[in-house]
Image (cartoon, rainbow, N blue to C red; front, top):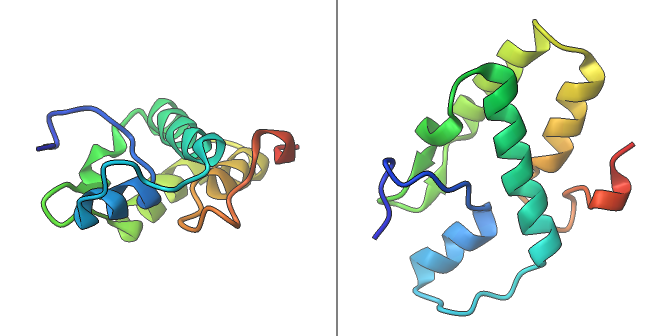
Length: 103
């Protein structure tokens, strides 16, 4: 199905849907896009692709790996940027920032 060679930044909601075999997952597409954008920005900021955080066999995301990448960014960039990234990468869609919510 998917492997670490396939570069895609799926949200946790979409990963859970894949695990459950759902073909039409119920999710907020804007917040899913927010998560994917957050992962893309994290890659650019850390100069390291966060694909290592994805386990496509068990359909999980390793939060310790994401934390490590965010901490690496914290040493290079402002707290504001890291906090925005943390908001964008919230596991729970209902607490994840929307595009209007980034300030």
